[in-house]
Length: 340
Ligand code: NAD
Ligand code: WQD
Image (cartoon, rainbow, N blue to C red; front, side, top):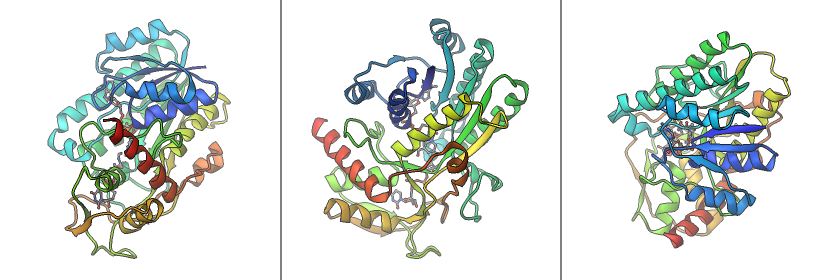
């Protein structure tokens, strides 16, 4: 089956393409490279031996987006990763985030309707839960107010899909709520390559260890957690990638009992910032120049997933833990720095 992967040159999209190709899917990508480069395609080729076609176009352009489906009338699944994803930037540029993330979703759904595509998977986020104190978070945990316009685009995106799915009964839809994706492909041919500078914890750690940053700051050690730092659910990108394949296979096999469903994707374990930093130092035997700083505005104190539904229904079992995340992220940091 042919699948359109939007945002296929990005971090999670590119790793998912590898897993899809490994499982026999044919893939076409579309990415306007606003936060990536086509170097990713070379990494995919090095791992799989396969060339993936990428359309460099903006999904907010409906006519251009339609052309992909005219060129590939056999596309029968869409995995929609493409979005702007920086929480802080979204606070500064809310309209740009609404414009990009919602219009691109709207256009992709319009194409699904026009071209009769049967299966759709949406990249959602734990950010839909807002600052919840229900732990672990299940798919039924109510949304709190979104902490940012970015998080709002995910809440609205899910609601758009839910409403559309009621009308588009011939198709089936899944929203996957990722927790904190990190790590790199174990082959070390592909990983996260932030082109506008990293802000997430794991790339900040590896950039500090390699000397791109003089030091890093741990944002707060006075929270009400076991060591005072915030707690998150760090999920390896290859485990996340495989969940997309499993979700698609689930829909194709008709195992879904409703045409719109939602799954959390985390490993279900909370890891504190200090524990993550210590895991890095243990696994890599590299010291890390860090200091304890003030709390970061908007940070949730602790959040981790209950992903039992994905295991039960999709047969998804994450294989990697925090040590594997640090090992693969570090190998990738060394490689991309050497090649820069
Ligand atoms: P990414 O930025 O690496 O990938 C997204 C890709 O989409 C980029 O390559 C970008 O160039 C492309 N893109 C953006 N707008 C586009 C448009 N209008 N037209 C065409 N291409 C466009 O991000 P990622 O980390 O791979 O995230 C993928 C998805 O997962 C996003 O929807 C993101 O919101 C979601 N998500 C990410 C995380 C995370 O921490 N990485 C967590 C939860 C959810
Ligand atoms: C993790 C922890 C920081 C950097 C974000 C989005 C969320 C989702 C995942 C997209 C926090 C601490 C970080 C640093 C630190 N993305 N930290 N020093 O904020 O949990 O989630 O990415 O959907 O929506 O909000 O991820 O990696 O930024 O932070 O101490 O230099 O690391 O305070 O506790 P976050 P993160």
